[in-house]
Length: 449
Image (cartoon, rainbow, N blue to C red; front, side, top):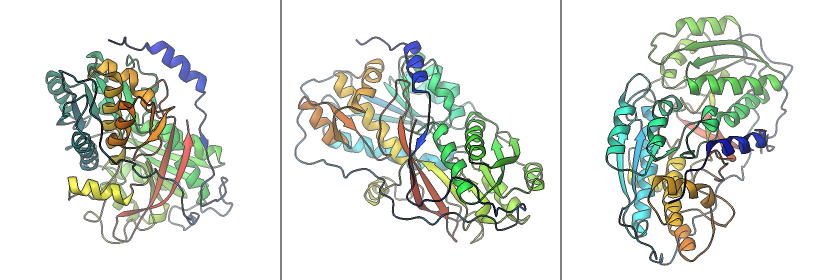
């Protein structure tokens, strides 16, 4: 049995990385300095984002093919994975694509013969949100059923309530959507991992992008939790480094239902652009803003609220609003596979990250020749780097069983883990809302942490 990695060396190695975010030049170009023609009125049309051009981002096609060789090692304890993803609460819209990504991964693994000669079992449980104790109850149930790994939670705030419970039990916690920088230095005994990049990267991209769109001043309405305040801090740092100024920042708490005060205070500062760093509270905040003259193209959103609003708002309400979601754009073939799992899917946010989490756990178990959580964790970094490229379970496990080292890159983009269990490189997608209040991809930005 492999011993638990020690947290101190992980933190020391992370510090040595100096967390410098190196963004590559984007396909659409544009200056990183705000335009001198920015408006001083929240209702004025001072925003003109650069036109997109073709992006070369994306993953290579899956190279599965042929017969997957049988595992030379079999396990008496089949791999059992739990999911702790939202079906209720303020992030419930993220649940369907994440759960579909998990289920697609499980299906492909089992179609290829499973892990170490046995089918993989998955048990789904609701994470709720921070207003409830659902996550703790679900985690207790999953641990009681003997899972080796838990995929989730989506919310950083929710993960903070269960991370010690999960990792303390010697079980891998693998989030497809946590972006709070706090987890990078958490004392998780080497058992916490994620496929979503830290908000250091998303904040950098969004802050810079608002500047390239001509905004000189920004107001922010921010959820007062680990996700919201952490992302806001990084957005502000990037925007101000580009020469802009954050002129207002108003907080609200999970569970609040009235936002007039925050909206009025932000609009009183007359920002060129407004960043909404929220969850589904955007359903209430957006109409308040547009009703007071804010133009949709002044609104910038984030992964916590980038959703299909076609049934919530009148046509055109969000036309021209933009936002960011970590990860590369979902490709058409991947969408088709997800829709075969869940035909009702409308959003694909974090589906790729969830699919990749399942594959990485399964491949680490294969390489470790064990389904114990601590053994899986000890091999997660190794299967993400330094070997032959592959991007689905059948092709990757074929290489492993033929004695090859592998480097898994998946549907969320390149996956290379740091010693802290964080992705060291990632894409951030930028999207724009159409007249029907659904969004479409604009461009991708690639960055390293």
